[in-house]
Length: 250
Ligand code: MF3
Ligand code: CO
Image 1 (tube, rainbow, N blue to C red):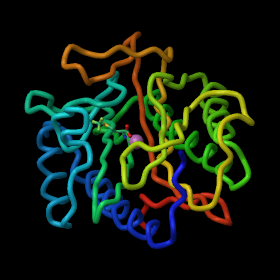
Image 2: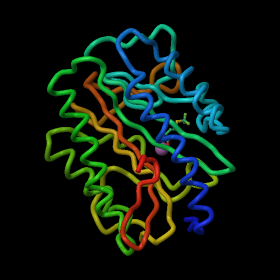
Image 3: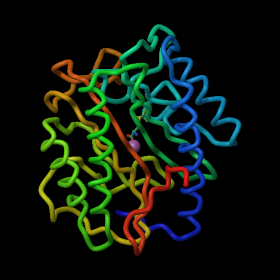
């Protein structure tokens, strides 16, 4: 069942989303050569606590950390570690969820570390662009897979591939609600979009093939062919005038 949110529920989701947006914005400056991914988690914990929120991922199905940090060929769900130090040329995907007053916000982005290769920089750019292509279709009356198809089309026409193993999702009082929002598929399928739906749209894009495998930690997804991967996610609400991005600072 897809839960349509009232304006007061949307306001609460927006408040959780604002916290996520502020922290991810701060991380763009905090991320630099030499810090560890555990340092990033410590920063996130401090900033979330300061705002009276709770990290959404810690304990979710046993996930051990407050934030997912996935470097280079890691796709999603990388676990922060003191041993994982960022070096020049890395790309680091950071996925953060927060709970405030019973409602969730969820967003992710990929941040360059120092000077990255032209290929890595194009991958990050195409992933962000694919999100916006998808969001253009997130209009009341369209169907969920209109978003999916627009994302896939942009990614593949730029020579990259979309991950199939993970998808976007409805969000609200739970981190994952219906509907699923795949980043691939034919247009015109799935549930119809309605005003008041809140969703996390999150393309995961590989420079090589779409397949992933899971490391022995049971969480970290990496590209099967070792190619780079990027992630871009926002929580959005469907309004009269299209999708409004909630995890963005205005
Ligand atoms: N943004 C991801 C998602 O929506 C993060 C979940 S990670 C987990 O699925 F650790 F919480 F599982
Ligand atoms: Co998500």
